[in-house]
Image (cartoon, rainbow, N blue to C red; front, side):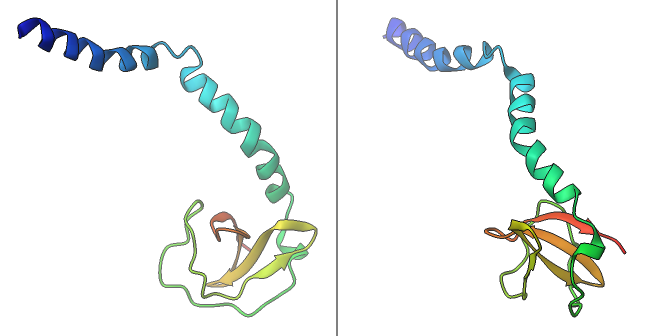
Length: 110
């Protein structure tokens, strides 16, 4: 019985050992993230407030945080020449979001 318990315990640890030996580790994750985030960040970083036509501002009670999704109830406007992004004016700030998720990717302070 004791041998069976030891074998079962060792079998549980085997997957963890293989994870610990990931040679890419955090560096591999950072490089992979940069490969995806670099082009997206570059496109959004090139957008300036003057590129976005003026729209009415909406009062938003919560904090506006990059990475957080905004409610679908707002009226979103197309970002010129950037089909993956939209924007909304919240508390007199232009907020650029991903079209699909409405996740905030940039806040432009005028």
